[in-house]
Image 1 (cartoon, helix red, strand yellow):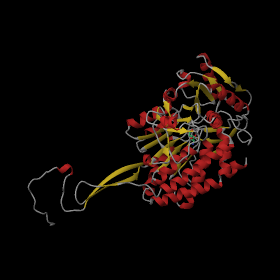
Image 2 (image 1 turned 120 degrees about the vertical axis):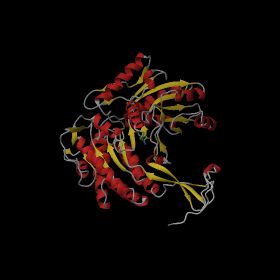
Image 3 (image 1 turned 90 degrees about the vertical axis):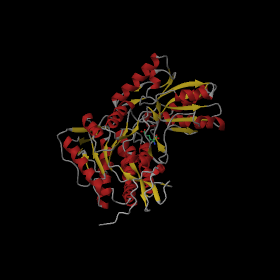
Length: 514
Ligand code: UN1
């Protein structure tokens, strides 16, 4: 395929790299093949990283940091601007590879690369706005202020569903902040990562840098854990399940490092009596079926006012009937495959469990036999407290339930261990405000008349409770990648102590230089 050539993807690719000309040639850890989830065919392979590769990556990244942190932040931003240009040039090819490797449809893959370009543009601007504030000192002739410094080497562990965009959210902001970045991508999507590393290499080379962006590919949990345990890596940004993220958080906390966790979601849409139903149905379908239900922001629970339940179900079924399922690169297709056979098995298990709990499948429910990991988008009448509904299953299953009063709908929304995204469809201002108030949605993202997925990069992205509490992308999320330093400068000749403390020995004679 042409786009593989354009991106420099060979049949077998090295899997660790710290910059131009710095690909490893280690082959001892074996080969990881990348399979197209739509057909089960091997696209290409990558040599997995050895411990020696990892150590080389870490050391080069550390020494690059010592140089990079001294480059003025606006100049660091210029490197990201060049990267944005490279991403624009190769947007088509890269989205082809992402679609092929992750199984998301081409339009969404293009959106993913667009998200990288967007965050790059934000990072360029941010590179001139790493503001610290100045405080008024309580002491005369004293200046009190804060400034922000980079942390060091930042480890970024990403998931298959956004194989490159989530890396970009972290990497571009971390880099303008003066950090260097080591990326461990999902072993399901190593080629997309290799392709992005190749683009980074080209841009680093043109700008005369190396080691700002590094990659190591592995499916070995022990090697991944080495990064998480590594005291030379002050921040670990992890995107993935709550189960794994909890472990990452514990390991990093035990060494008093920092972690930024983007974990499972269990996102609900509430449709109240006043909702614009047309808008609501379109948003629900995109939220539940987009990326085949494999976004952390996918809509998993639908809470409908009881008076509208029948109407909504009919419209959803009509819309679901029209969903074209097929090859991700086919422009007519709206839903691609799940990532793996295990994901298909998890889909079936969840449905069995829902049915055993008393759930009624209203649409879909079947695995589509044949090539690839295809399932039907599925609607299930369910109850919120069932364990299967409380859990995140990465599949296009939407659990439907009803409510009478808005307070009850909000309580259902919040009655889940996770707290990532949420949405209310309403044309009633008071209900909208009620939902957005402190006693409203408890999620990191709460939308009105906008679905749960497809957040813009300008806001801070992340969620509460079992979602892990991290915030990435826009707003002041850049602060997660920097350390704050408070500075007090005395420009006078007295030494007044804070809090008015007097600590005198009576010795007032000036000390003269010898
Ligand atoms: C994810 O699924 O890990 O809001 C990230 C969205 C995307 C990002 C999803 N911008 O759906």
